[in-house]
Structures are given as C-alpha cells and as structure tokens.
Length: 249
Image (tube, rainbow, N blue to C red; front, side, top):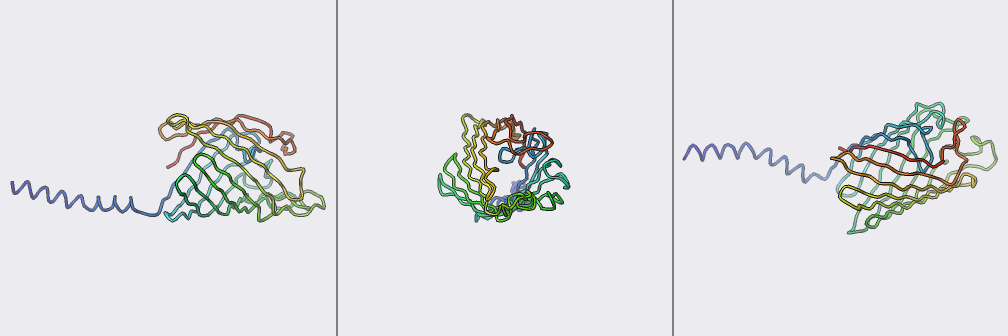
C-alpha cells in the first residue's frame, strides 16, 4: 500500500511540470500561426498577378489577446505584370481588431512590396490604410492608399494626371457555412484610382471552400468589368475559375 501511494505521489509530481506548461500555454496571450497555399491563378481584386498561371503562397501571423496583430504574406507574381523584380510580392501588415458578440472591427496598415520591380523607374510598392466592420458572416472593408496606387503617376503613365495617392477600394465579403465544413463565399469590390478614372473597375467572386481534415479546398469564379489591365497581350481581368488548396498551422 505504501509503495502504491509513493508511486502515485511520484507520478503526480512528475506530471505537474507538464500540466503547468500546458496550462501556461493555454493561458498565453500570444498566438503564432502560419499558412501555405497553392492557387491556379493569383487574383488580386479580380486582376491576375501571375499571367493566369498558378502561384505558391504563404505567410505567418502573430496576434495578442488584446487585439493587436502583425503579419507577413508572400506570393509568386509574374514578371510581365511586375517587370524587373524578383517575381515575388511580400505583404507586411499590422493592426488592431476586436469582436463584440456578433459584431467586430479591424483597423490597420498594409504594405505591398515588390523587390526591385519598377515601371518607367517608378516602384510598384504601395502602402494602404484600412478599416473594416463585420457582422456574423458579412464584412465591409475600405482601403485607402497612402502612396501612389501600385506605381501609377504621371511618370509611369506618361500623362499630366498627377499622382494616384488617395485611391480607394471598397469591398463587401460574405462567408456562410451551409453544412459542416462546407462554406459559401461571395465578394464584390469597387476600385477607384485617384486622377485616373479610366482605371476604375468593379470585381466579383463567388465560390465555396471545404475543410478536408485541415486542408481547405477552394473553387471560385472571379470576374471584373474592365479590360484595361493587360500583360503580354492578355486581358488579366477576364472571368475565370480559380482553384486552391491551403493549410494553416
């Protein structure tokens, strides 16, 4: 009996550090996650960034229980769309978000970085500020450029229109689970480019995702109402189906 009690006491003592570590981890205000994806075509606001070819994407996110977050996301892009660069887009962002029951808000900054890519000597790099509000499965978001909109200005366009700082993008997104692990997604967005009204356009997306044991399979139809964005003689805004597989960890 005494040996049994002693053995139980030793086992409990040995288990306590592990239990304490698990509890500490569960109570930690810090969260670090990563994500990877392969998509058949990288569409940014309806416009192909990969010359209608596949892309490899991935990122890492840090968040704090207070609502503060930081992150980095990267994707391969086409040298026809971003000449002179390394064929990569690197996004850096940070902000603050909070939820109150079914409602939530999100504010932050996002910097799009295209190493060495230029057009007429002007960089594509762009800084945006954004604010978003959500209710259950709906999210309304507005983004405003704090720099020129992806290199668009008088130098890169050969016009006298001026800079494009102050361009905006308004979008409405929906994500509704219709069955366990099966989610319908919808999106509509309106891009306005300051001083360059000919570049204004609307984009749309409708599709679905399915969570297969942690791997998210996606299929969507993406389209725009513009034909001014071309690369290599191809219309980068024409309607197409986009397939994807992603994993978060």
